[in-house]
Image (cartoon, rainbow, N blue to C red; front, side):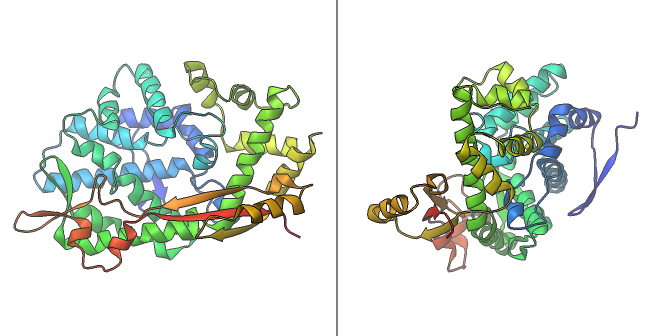
Length: 394
């Protein structure tokens, strides 16, 4: 069987599979499940083209990582074939732990565990199936491999994951403000003292990357309509879990039923097995079933989500006054399910946590914000917090 196939990606063109091990991992049902996991949750309610999946993002990240290895080798950074394959496996599987609709339901279907930890559980399970061939990839993923720069390429403020998702999400949403020059950024990467650095010639591309990230978060990832859709889906699962606890609800998906009836149980091997069986399809089918539920609140929420009849949202730079919130609850006492509040926060760049470092020709290395001539870059290092509250439309 030919294990060196290619994928035709709309962003990068042809992506080839670099090894038989990677081919076999891609073929495994755990990985194929990512074809049915939305990359951007419910953002397609705002941007109709945003139907891309974690599957293509994982392949794109692997493709970019191959380019990184090629660039670093040209700069006399010694990377063995074994290290290269492990690095590609690690980035390929970095998001395999995402559940249905990615971040939207990350803490609704299973609790007290992040998707990165679930990704690690999947990698360990695959490692058993592949006779220990993922040992090195797991070391890199966990940050335990002695050559630390590999881990920084997998997870940091300038990692390959971010390079792909900004480029990919910008393409599929049509938000051109998020488009970045990944080839230029990758060509400027280097390694000094086991740290990833950016050569000074690439500083403007990095500034554009930081600005693009800020714009994508406020224009796309934290868009007010997408925010309402995400919270509506979370409210549906909160209600469903309450009904499941009292045996007042059913679901045709065995995996989803298993997880909804054990919302606070420890994440065991059996949990992983059941988690691996569910995807966006299970959730949509369940919501369609629940539109006929005898529970009026659940049925109303489900119909609102499927029909895109969202509550209105108000966003403020300051917390809402309690008197105003009480007034809303009193005014809409018969529609409490559509009143929810919270806060959203984002920081485009953290100068203190795994900072991006700029390498100058004289060998000097400086942190990005102290190197940049961009007047707004220091502003982008500060977190922005906004508050929101929703209420039924009149």
